[in-house]
Amino acid sequence: MDKGRKLIIAGNWKMNKTVAEALDLVNGLKRELANIKEIDIVVCPPFTALSDVSKAILNTNIRLGAQNMSEHNFGAYTGEIAAGMLKEFSVRYVILGHSERRQYQKETDELIAKKALAAHAASLKPIVCVGETLAQREAGRTELVVGTQLRKSLAALSAGQMEETIIAYEPIWAIGTGKNATADQAQDAHMFIRKQLAAMFNETVARHARIQYGGSVKPSNARELMSQRDVDGALVGGASLEDRSFSDIIKNCVN
Ligand code: PGA
Image: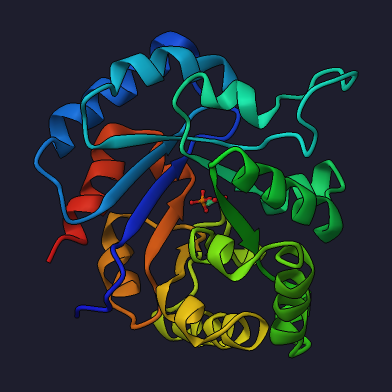
């Protein structure tokens, strides 16, 4: 199905991989994925591996992403990393507001909005994560929760910036549980998100913006999920930690 949007599949390695392990993984991916042109491929290693992975993927079809960044450009923020520092390693994408950061680091939509603006100011493309808990879904509050997250975390962006922003819909109950959303559940949520983008920005933005699905994506379910009309890619955690499973996900989604 040609949706007029190129699929983007990103691996979120989370807090995994030493530099040596990261290089093993990315060298495997280079071999497996060398011929793929139809899909944008992104890896998001931990900060400590960005430098080496960046060199390893030079002149390949694999792009680099980071898992987080500061909303500030520089200064007395111990332990933080600024967008400009990521740019030194040719980072192109940055995951913002992952549910693990919302939960463990107490990140708010307001903070994510500032980070998204700072990312664009440095020409990094943010991957802004949204998604509901199981309790929220069961209470019928999915659209309310996701709608609020979108409205607040994208509040600072212009229409032009939004077109270059990627949304990752990641139902929290599907992350790391092995229990993915069904294709219908994903499509319903993605269609809702696209309508929200049209209301918040305009129809063109909604048509162009890419919306990834995340939550237990694996080689066996990727194709069906990606074939949904409003699903434009995947954010993959566990299955991105091994070269075979991540490259199988991507190969299974090539038409
Ligand atoms: P998972 O994680 O693929 O392991 O469910 C997805 C994510 O957290 O981005």
